[in-house]
Amino acid sequence: MQGACSAPRLSIVKRARIPVASSGRPGGADDGRGGQDPESPSVASRAIRTLRAEGLGAVASKAAAALGGGGAVVVFEMQPQRVLDRAGPVPGVLVRPLEQADLPAYAGSQPSTEEMVEARLRRGDRCIVAVEGGSVLGSRWASTASADIGDIWLSFPLCPGVAYSYDAFTVAEARGRGIAAAVTAALFEELVEDGAERVINAVLPGNPAGQGLARERSDALGALRSNRLGDWIVARCEIPAGYVGPPQPFKGAVPSS
Image (cartoon, rainbow, N blue to C red; front, side, top):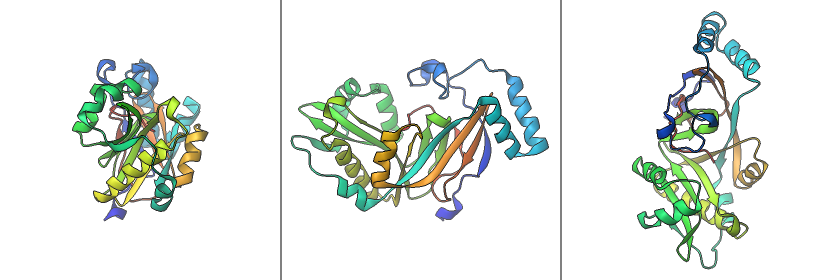
């Protein structure tokens, strides 16, 4: 049952140690999204002692005080009619699933390498692209396995019937033509046809443009938050049960949208 799939409101996760060379992300260890860093292991020891003596709430509070805050994303659930109503045909542009032959053009226009794209496809993620004259103008990805959110250093397994849409991108010169809406609608329809009952995505609170677009087609569910404390992450789930399971260390494979 979907209601049985739920992330705890508060939890502590051991950070993944991903070598810079294999992280598949620009910025490596300095981007705060899963790379190694020189933080003292004594911080983790203090977190464990606080957990045992005072509980998870105290750990979260002390983490926020020590770090001056933490990462957070707002989670939205796409609403079918609003997604489809915003979309329309874009003259001269073909909207379809990503094909192997598209990879060089995709990598040339997006902030991703061919290796990153192939890794996503191997694990079963899907991508819809907008193509015009051999150029990839826009794209959007989705997973039915997990929501990997680098901005809060965590990955969340998805509950049955839930899909996670991520990494929406439109090249600057093609924006304003309705490409993003068309790609999102096509991806949504494909996910629903394959059995998804709910489609979610995550947007940074500090991204007003992304928040505005999300609210046009989606309803906000709540937030996922984290505080990093040495080798540990204090995770807070503020969305209803039935969407994501208990958090895991960030896999370092994909960025959030």
